[in-house]
Amino acid sequence: MAFPLLYAYGTIHTMIERVTTGIEGLDSLLSGGVPKRTITTISGPIGLGKTCMAWQFMKKGLYADEKVLLMTAKDSPECLLQTAAELGYDLGWALDQSRLF
Image (cartoon, rainbow, N blue to C red):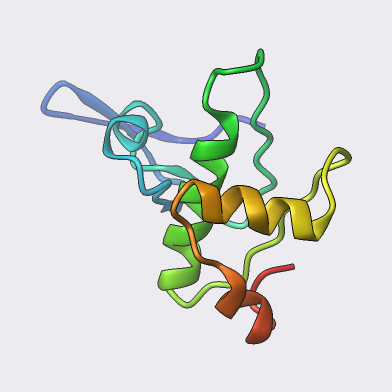
């Protein structure tokens, strides 16, 4: 399925509604963020920053009053929250409010 594109002032814009990742440079590369209401997969080699990007994206969504689902085959919820805390993301409140799954 092709998506319509708009060309204005030297920049291509899609008409797809987007959600910011919370990372300005990445949002710029993604024409404003990731497509809304889609599943986004982050993959790559160890040390690339996938986890940091995921936590930033989730934090941005949670603070925008969104519900967030993180799926991983590797870590337990406790391990994920510990990793988040080590990276400076205190997300325990989101679990308490049933906004992080």
